[in-house]
Length: 159
Image 1 (cartoon, rainbow, N blue to C red):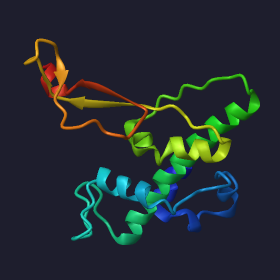
Image 2 (cartoon, rainbow, N blue to C red):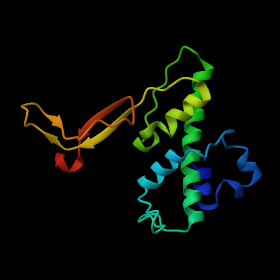
Image 3 (tube, rainbow, N blue to C red):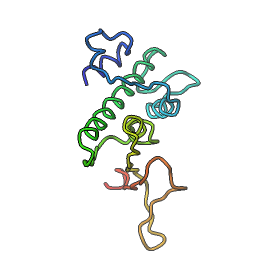
């Protein structure tokens, strides 16, 4: 996590060689969907070049994206290493939604390393209605961000 933090400040290319040796061998920064998902998640406005909670230059935004991608690659490589060590093992990785949503972060990166498509579940907080007699999530249409979407109550609806 300290290397990820350093990357968020200086970028991958400016890491000292002794730290670069600690990085996963394959870090894919070319996935446009992953980049867009990250930028949307931090509230980046492409028209103004500003993210409300992450103010900074274009270089700073790139460093944050590299740090996020490094974290995704590290977790993916760790999962792939466990799977490679024992072909009969199953792995359950509990990670934040942003690391699974759209499959571009961890799931696709594990698949790239192992050839196995991970099964993913994403929790999605939504409002609920009981108009039909049974509690039902209020959604316009099902998303396709994971194999299963687990609709949960929003925090504001619980209080």
